[in-house]
Image 1: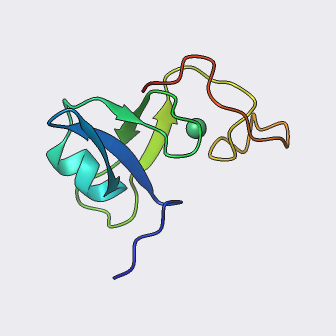
Image 2: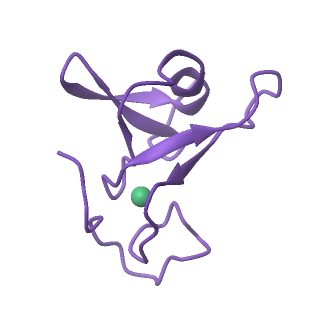
Image 3: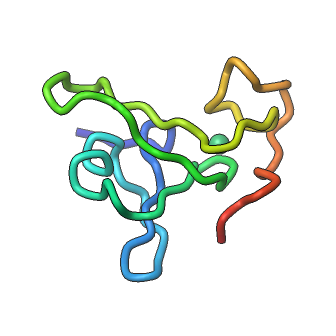
Length: 85
Ligand SMILES: [Zn+2]
């Protein structure tokens, strides 16, 4: 199954950011630091173990420069003001 960067999130594993599918990040990396692959803002995963594909990411701090937050996105992609690196 193909994984695109639109459906995953980055997880800090052994000090390096790796793109992980959301379901895997949610199931296996609950306690690890995670960030949005688009804006690099800190995120957490939320969803259900039992429903396939029901996992989503939520930004800890909302900003208007990330298309992964369609409700808040102002139309121009910008790095998160508190981006993790
Ligand atoms: Zn983002």
